Length: 463
Ligand code: C2O
Ligand code: CU
Ligand code: CU
Image 1 (tube, protein in one colour):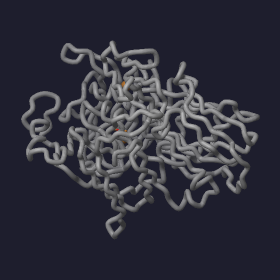
Image 2 (cartoon, rainbow, N blue to C red):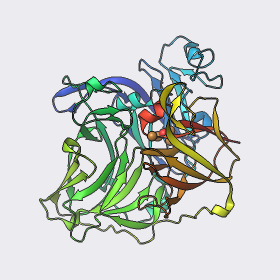
Image 3 (cartoon, rainbow, N blue to C red):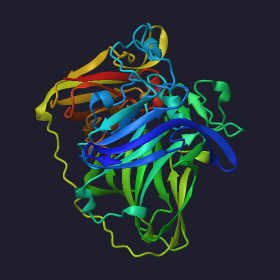
Image 4 (cartoon, rainbow, N blue to C red):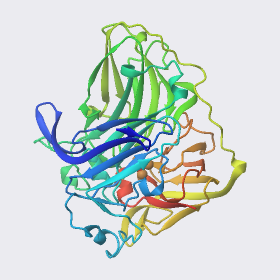
């Protein structure tokens, strides 16, 4: 439904049995009972109002990842939507009176249903929405609470890029299954580990089945034309290095046109692309470089065994192709270090938290009242990020640009507007960000969801 207030959507979060593995039902928690959830397609500047109804047995929080959203609707980790029929005030023990880290007198709790309003005053981009409940994001997303939200605009429409059925959003997520088809969240129970399934403290939870849009290692039939692949890594913790096998003659088969925050300035050719959790890379693949009848596999060079392959494409027929990849895609004004008022250091590291091992930022585990950074609205800041391990660092509200990694400039996958940086072990990177949009409290965190749940998250208050 559309009216002056924007486009309206209704999503029911519920448990459902679906067939992810052939012939075996799997119980998921899904937006509208499906995984991935329904894809929402919006236009820049046109508000989307999404009414969520929670028919799950647990509280939920919805976050639009990459969205520039007022804090009240951003999915702050304690702004719970309680299940339908939960007694009024049931959220209170999660907020007001519960002692300890969960305690958050500022939390806004709703019961049954609530609207999330997204102004979407932002560039065209591949966004996604997912659960964001404090301490439980990992298991909730693992069970299926994730979906695409695409934002388009006129600038992008004017480009001769592949569109419609040649524009494929691909949600890549690893999962593990029990023998009965149930989703297996190994958590930190080592007795559940098997080759490829892992829940090591450092790595987070890894599965041995690669799902693309909810289908294990799918096969897509394509025409011998250019296709746009919107790659999203929706895995809890797995990193991928994606490549085409065989590569097209001459290589450079993954032509990157966009990233987390939309189109790049110019296309960049890659043989392989590293994809950390939550990152998006929009690439164009020209299947016209292959023979009709040929199969091309999207492989994962970081994988072993069952995680080496992601999906296959079969070039099923020839096709007319009037698309092209222009040399100039968009304009990205560079943020200038000279405009930065503040430089902050954020150390993403393993630390002792009240005598227990945990993941922290600057030695502090997430707590709703604990503020890591206060930034004035519209101010520019430089953040120096350091790391003891793989930590995909994500900032809510505002996209950033990468200034450097170690002693060099941005890496090959760091171009354009990013919202998630693939920070590697013992690495130091600097990013520059303008906190424009809205005042209020936001979070930034490691997007390895097990690290996030183990408190590797901080508060950013924009005032
Ligand atoms: Cu993808 Cu804080 O989120
Ligand atoms: Cu986000
Ligand atoms: Cu991490």
